[in-house]
Image (cartoon, rainbow, N blue to C red; front, side):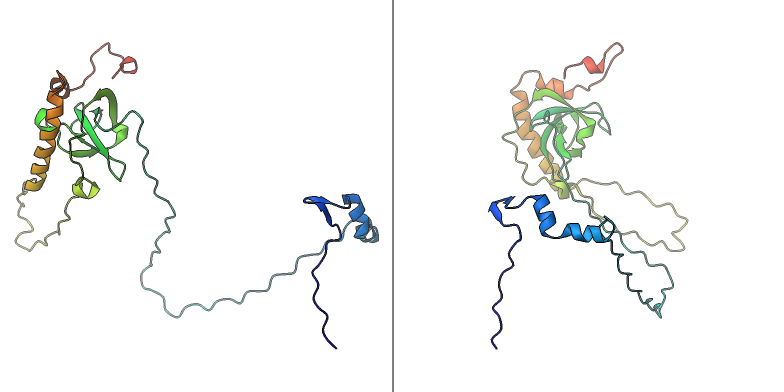
Length: 233
């Protein structure tokens, strides 16, 4: 005898149009016989207790135990989000530094690096601030701008400012009590040349604007009676 051909299941409540059935909810309640099931169980639908979970077999303890506690590295699920630059800071904007070695100095903003830090310079020849990275939380943006269209910034990134890791030397018995002479850190010649190149390109734009060079060389400070929240930078 040949097997019966499989037929697709049809709904008891066919759609007249998409989303609208032929029978109402009350009609389907009687059509499916739910009223009889409810009446048989005292007016309440029967509830079935969930099946008990199968007992897990205890895992055998390992035969080897490490002598020291092995720390498992924590999984870091944090996604890096690029730092949003303030709307008041644009390339060429003159900033006032609020913290650090050059606090109160005015600098020129060049560009934002991948780490979110700002690349700024004095220039060095004007006020002694070299090429350096600063956090935008510690600067005040002014309305003064410098034209930096002629400055080449292609080689400056976060890796440019990384310090070389030096290996510590092991001291012998004779050198242990001797005071080591501190070696003076010298700036590489290529970084000196980069600073001179950027300064030369910036100073051309600065000298084209009257009194801008004096403005950048002057240190920002507050005097008694001055209200910072009322100042316009």
